[in-house]
Length: 210
Ligand code: GAR
Image (cartoon, rainbow, N blue to C red; front, side):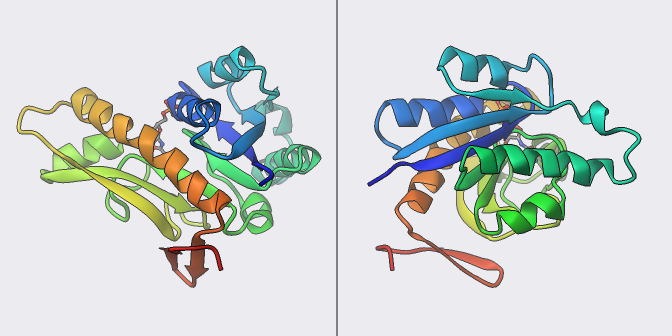
């Protein structure tokens, strides 16, 4: 089987990118990272790509200022990069920028996001802080296909994580992150095997590829 070609969009620390790299290098994920794109210059995600000989591209959102639709123009540039690298599946791995329909439509049911809560609870920024504030006893992480709403779209996989009485944002985030690093490569592998079906708002994990 030819490994599927991934394009990873990341803004910061890049630990989820690293989890994907590690899964590929340990042969538990049949994929190759064709390109890593970051909206942040010198991000750790870019460094990680470079350490593993992966093509990295920094696209400066500021360079689109002055355009009438800077976010769309920015996404058009990303789309060109993804096409040029023949990307089949896009991963938002800590990509802290809202994507526009320019990308969403081009990669419908072919763009995944990871989020540190059990969606649809606690979308947006500070999901772990929101969970602590709400006093939930269980939170977790979600991998879903990207649609137009922020942290919305058909849910592919979720892992639950207990919230402890003495948890801080940092301790809860760390426990959730550990699970994120397992979940994201698993979801990508299911996609690679053709085992994710999407019907309207629901994604289903299939026993075998159709
Ligand atoms: C992760 O916890 C990811 O789930 C979250 O940002 C962190 C990025 O960490 N994403 C979101 O909150 C998206 N709404 P990383 O850069 O180390 O992968």
